[in-house]
Amino acid sequence: MERRQIVACGGFLLGSAIDEYVLGLARGRKLLFVGTATGDDSSVIVLAYERLAGRADVRHAKFFPWPPADLRELALTSDVICVGGGNTANMLAIWRVHGFDAVLREAWERGVVLCGSSAGMICWFEAGITDSFGPQLEGMRDGLGFLAGSACPHYDGEELRRPRYQELVANGFPPGYAADDAVALRFEGTELAEVVAVAPGKHAYRVEPGVEERLDVRVL
Image (cartoon, rainbow, N blue to C red; front, side, top):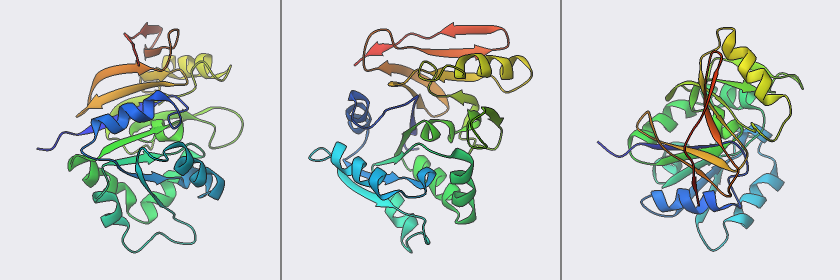
């Protein structure tokens, strides 16, 4: 079986040492950027190209007005698929309508490294905390489910993230992982293998009802 890897980042993956870390895990440097969560905003796509210029062979997949006819081939011939931030719920709905959820699972099982930050962190889990439904933070339980439990990005970057996630988990929301901005959790198969950060003082946590356990972090 191919090595299955997911790198889930709390925020700011592209343009940090984490993107080079991800590329170093992959078989090659063909990276597919998916910006569905921002409605395929052209400026976001251009920024991905700029931040990876000279270091990766970047392609992108747009779902508006419709996805490319060769979407599956584009994904399966990539070494890395990177998912940008934005509206997680909208992104997942669009992916499912076009069958991209199944394509992503196939890519993962074939050894393509999956990664992303914010929405691109939450999506791989069964559940996550999101502002997809408005400025308030809500629990969402219909992630892709490649990884068990829940995820919370921006743990140090947004004031309400930490207390709201702890509240949700205490009240029956699936326990899971929280990551500060510029911190990433790498999973091999479905097990956490390593946590990395771009600088000291950045952390990730395992969050259970009434318990927040700080995880060991390797600074890149």
